[in-house]
Length: 335
Image (cartoon, rainbow, N blue to C red; front, side, top):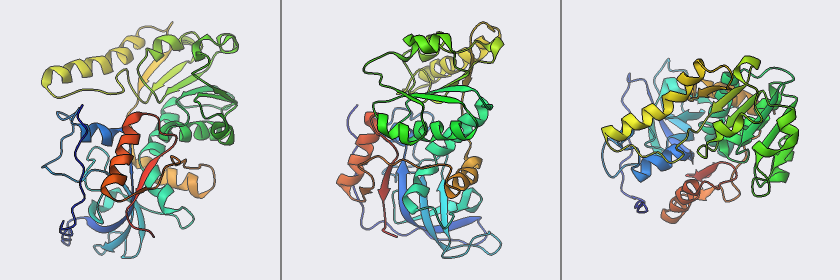
């Protein structure tokens, strides 16, 4: 696809705060992006997620400073907050943003701004995956794509949940070891589904943060079946780069998403397949994990990116490449 045009507008008016609308006016300090933002910017999923008008302001996951608020909102001017726009990935790459007060969470004092902005999507998704998987003490977990934004949080949270052995695929061996991973599988050198050790000592849970390549089919060689409690958690589905621009593509996409969960309901000899949806109500829990020192947010070494045309372009280009090692975040205003 053609590279999207990204420009910085110097004359964009500051959003107007209106009282008793349930909103906060926030000065944005940092905005992180995820693959969903790249999908929206590319126009690949325009039938599902489309900006209300063009040009639009991308980005939805921010850490900011409250400028104006309603009495009784629970927030005051000067509060540091974290916010995720969920399925509305608009408005974050700006100096000011109007957000729903009910979706904002106060930033703990000991969590830095860049980590706070970077946890609002990927770490929340990771925690949701761990909760959906219902990992129990002593279980064995494989995370596919452990050095990405979701994966780097998932490996830590799996350990926190009591997993006795956590393996992950990545080229970033030292990074994953520092996060508590027991075995880092370099996918350039070996296929995770062909490792003899894991064909004998099967995993209880596989969390797929990569998608595509028939990972579910391959997982049956190293993952317990449904009868014995095996769970495959698909954070990313069979189409890592979905195209949903018309109703026919939407129907095909929906069918592809739904058939595996439905099929495995009646196939106990296969691992249970769960297609996961993120839950933004886990944001407060994620911030608590970070504050207590139980979760480290890994930033892509190139982060933070500058809030400039080239900086934002580079951030989206890195995100779209699929090779970021950690979260991509743009620093809007130095705090």
